[in-house]
Image 1 (cartoon, one colour):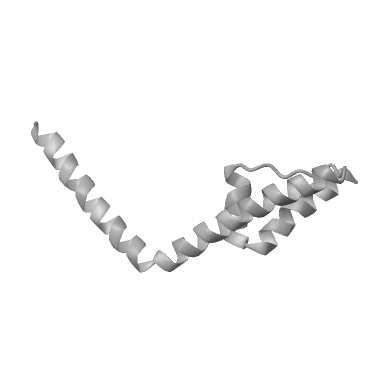
Image 2 (cartoon, rainbow, N blue to C red):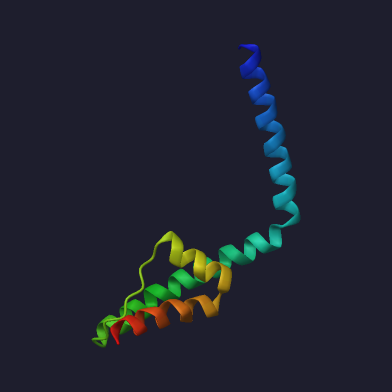
Length: 90
């Protein structure tokens, strides 16, 4: 192993340890975000199926942007996404 590679490995490990420490302190925020994102994804799938069965053309896609919106804003983000799609139908 060359000297540069060894230094890069040591720096990478130090950054990983710092990242783990930061995440440990902010674990509650991360867990809340992930839970809101998972519940929001399930709600989007449920509402898409419900609207589809009733013949309403409002469909919100599951993609990183919509999941991030629901994860950050929670129920407000969920209604925002469906509000935008409803506005597009007008």
